[in-house]
Image (tube, rainbow, N blue to C red; front, top):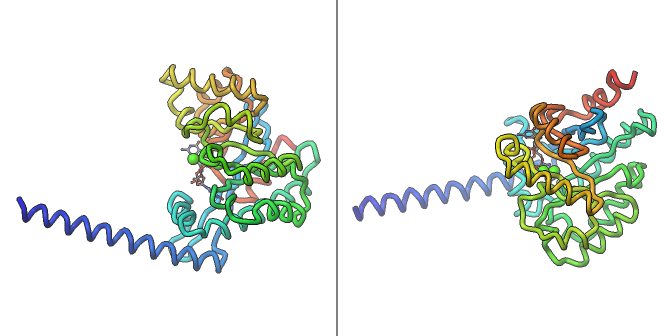
Length: 281
Ligand code: C2E
Ligand code: CA
Ligand code: CA
Ligand code: CA
């Protein structure tokens, strides 16, 4: 039995070693791809659940690897955050998303002008000059601050980094909107929601998934929506995959949503077609 234990330990060590080598390889490949600019953005419509109109798009990054093809963020964002590479990647994401939304807005009447919602990791907020970068990026793209929404996580909400909150408030005063992503999965308290510069709660797709067969989950979703109404916040439900999801959310008073029922994330050109589609002519 002692021998078997030793064997297991060796196997464990070699697996651990393998995982470390893999992470290091991923990191250096990622570093290279930042220099080469191997990233692309896809856009998923955020839809008015009552009218089916598109209000905006969430920008989602993909790594366009020359040999491995499209790599989704769940396979590299963690390493990007640990290594700090998320900072240059995130800068590019913001610039690119704003360039794209500027193009869309030039081609559409003002009443149909969409916004773009960009994911920002805590690490990016902590990097010096984040807010300045947002300001200059808006100016360079030539879009009003109202064309931009930033999605942050509850982790940031729980922190007491006053510098970050002061900067976020400054952005919000300019007109940039701030959304809490994956709301309900973290442990933020209600107090924070009142004190912080927040405009939107995004209900995580796990709640949407479960609410159909689980009345407790449905009550939770309903609770989040009433909370948002009380605090004067907008709600976006994520991961709407079926008409049942949509109808139930509408009944509960949720104004906006995104998910495969409407569209998967698509390229900028396809997103534009989505905006100028049948409804526009
Ligand atoms: P997220 O911000 O919660 O984004 C929603 C994810 O759910 C996206 O996955 C989207 O493609 C997927 N999704 C949308 N509708 C549905 C649906 O109806 N059903 C299901 N099952 N999934 C749906 P994606 O694009 O793989 O992104 C994963 C995560 O990576 C994002 O989660 C976000 O946390 C992160 N991420 C993506 N782009 C960026 C970025 O530019 N910067 C940073 N920091 N993080 C990013
Ligand atoms: Ca998001
Ligand atoms: Ca989310
Ligand atoms: Ca998520």
